[in-house]
Length: 427
Image (cartoon, helix red, strand yellow):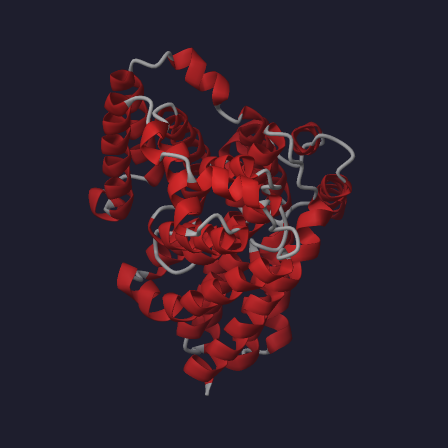
């Protein structure tokens, strides 16, 4: 159905106002997102039924299930064990620890989704920071960035890649050959940049370093039976993620299965675990999905995509670069899942109209949408989860604090991708 100019203006006003309030960071972002969603429904931009259909239940199911698995696994002491082990390998040097943890995050993110990786790595990070008496925020920002970069490398690492892969028929190896080639150098480069940017803050006293080096990691494991059960279920879940396209199950279905199985065999009280789920973050996502649904419903996202295609007049180089940069900037501010969902049919239409080679456009969309999510704290699911977990522990990462550091580095990654796409696909 066509929407009036009034409805387009109202949906844009609600969306922009909500984002400005989130950026100003004066109010609770979950309340802002839910208020924006409620306004979209009250003002008839979306019906209540459509608003609920806009929620990506695959993402929500995956988040809650992985939180449950991680909360149960945490009770075994394995994260403390990993923290002490990491610190010992790095000889207690925070500069080396941030590099080590970021690279581990990036590598795991290529095979798990980046949200799951953040849920696994952040408890280790908080323990390391506590033991060394240093601020965990530099580590969190570097790890969030690494998780989004690593997730870009493979078909299963980031939801936009799964969507592009299934829409175009691209395989796991296609993503390795095309995305991973540029993503791996970017991971090493950006990790080193963050370590250098935070070098002055990455200082631990000699006493704290020595104290940590004397810790016995084997004593960190408090429940060996629970550890065995948790690792078995986690391994099964990861295997499920890697095989999900062959199994014909959504990643959320696999995660829910893992969470239910672990709840059943761990003998941990269900209500205790459910109390620990980051519900505030979950409802922030619910509100965000509904708000983005509102601007999608009135055709604003489609108008933006159409505008890009009109400007480039079907020129392959210009179109590829426009898709890369628009995807990156847009994905920093709106969730990349609905953006990619809108761009896929637009690119297919463009191919039908102009007959151009679409191969570079798919990689431009993948790299732009996945890496662009690093630009702000609300650009990707992993960012929202990480800042939520940090706030729970008394370390508030504001929109401005994250933006100041991460946005310029994100732009650098897109400049590298611009050169990569031009040299390998467009000359």
